[in-house]
Length: 145
Image 1 (tube, one colour):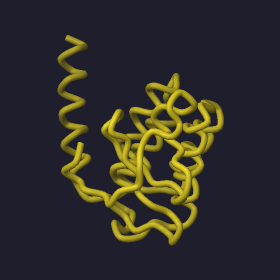
Image 2: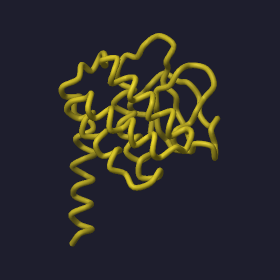
Image 3: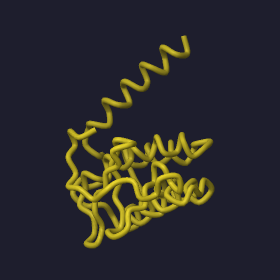
Image 4: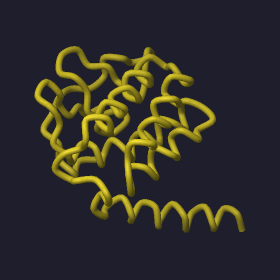
């Protein structure tokens, strides 16, 4: 029974990801929200669970709607794998927005996921030190998975 409830929850959650970002302007994020997101990305790339958890909490405090919900889930993660799964969902939403000059969308073919980071050397948040340089900067395409 728990498995059925979990499956139904995941289907509903996945469908909700395609909805617009509520409370945040889909074109621009406020500086604090973006800064907290980048802190999460850097902490995950460094395999730093405690710093990532704190950054997720700060992101939740400075966000609304879907971004807040996703950040809260990330902050509640028990381990890096779970946290990275929540980060994937969050990053898909962040990748849809405009970001400051000097930042770009990166894609990891192994994780089949996007993230936003400072341009330059790739710092993969999905594999951390295991495959830090996996991925490349690309133009975000929502249909690519």
